[in-house]
Structure formats: structure tokens, C-alpha cells
Length: 255
Image (tube, rainbow, N blue to C red; front, side, top):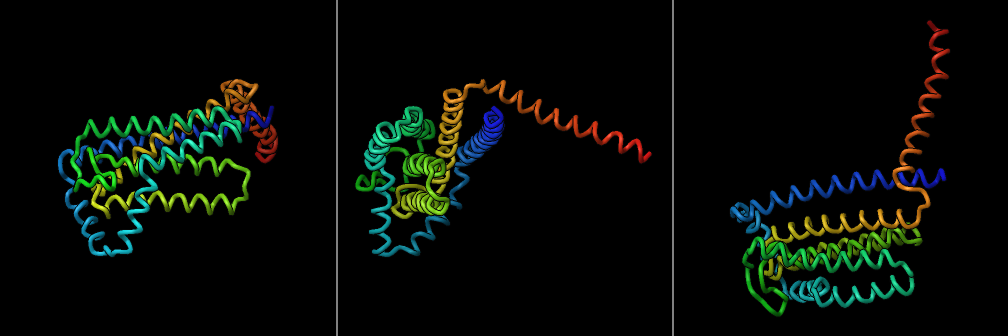
């Protein structure tokens, strides 16, 4: 029971930090979107686009064309099916399977909705690299952040050695960054689209992971969450009172 109360405390801290971070990122996304609507990020976008134009080579053309496909809808959808099958049949984790589907499916719906709201045109139209439709936020950066971010979450929670977890997490994080920069390099998005995609992806992924952790607690724990927190509080508070009472005689003796 003591272990459950400690886990409840960790979960409460995780939920509080996660929700606060999500609220902060929502504010940042809103601020960025308002700047985009008012055309105040043109200088920022042009500087970064100009930088990528200066480093353009035939080798980078090939590399970024391949990288951008790793963040495409067809690729992420195909690999998501494999992940769902592994989670359901091998890991036998129905809740993680469900929330992975919600994360990926909900991300697609949210991306479409945001694009319809802001209706920002693209720097260039190129169907060969999936550069059609509205530009803000970037579907590639948002989708890759949610998909690969969820994989990082699963890796961190796995039983693999710390070195393996760290290595895989770094590789996937770099891949997400490369996918985002590929969209700028190939002229499919403005840099501010990419930043917005990362912000929106982080918000959605955070909410999905928080909901998953909450549901898993409710499903696995025999002790209600509120009761566990109350017990943890009383235990910690009682220990402080007991320690204070023990200190009182020594304080009085010194007086």
C-alpha cells in the first residue's frame, strides 16, 4: 500500500507538471498563430529559408527527400498499424494501444482543423513531396512529433537498459528535427509552420500521455487515486508533526 501511495504522489506531480506545460504551450501556439495572421514573422521565416538555400546541394536534396517521406502521412500510417499490432498482440496492452490510436488519429483530425482555421498558403506547391493544401501548422512536423514522441514514451517505460533507452530516444528526437527541417529545405513550409507543428504536437502528445497514465492508474490500482493522495499527505504531514514534537523539548531545554 505504501508503494501505491508513493506512485500516486509521482502521478500527481506528473499530471500537474504536464498540464501546466500544456497550458504554457497553448499560449505560445496562440501567440505564434497571431503573429502569423498579422504577417509579423516574414523576416524570421525569410532568414531561415535563406540559410537553407545557401547550404543546398544535390546530396542534401536526396537526403531531405528521403527524410521527408519518413514523416509523411502514408509512412506514419503504415508504421502505426505495425505498432498497434505489436502493442495489442505482443505487449497485450489494450490501454496503450487505445491511446496510441487516439494520439495518431486525433493528431490527423487536429492538424486538418488547424489548417482550416488559419488557411495559410504554402511557400511552394509540390505534390511530389506532399506539399499541397494549407501550410500552418506543418502536418509533417506535428505528425512526426506525436508518432515518434509516443515511441520515445514507450521506450522510456520499457525494461531496456538505460543506455539503449537514451540512444534510441536521441535518434528519434534527431529524426523529428530532420523531418521538420526537410520541409523548410524542400520549400514545402515556412519555418514558423514547423515551430507551430512542434508546439501543437507537444500539446496533443502531452494530453494523450497524461490521460493514458491516469487511466492505467485507475485500472491497475486497488486504491482510489484521491484516497492514495490523502494517505500520502497524512503520512508526510504526520511525520513532520511528530518530528516537530520531538524537537520541542530540546528547544525548551535550551531556553
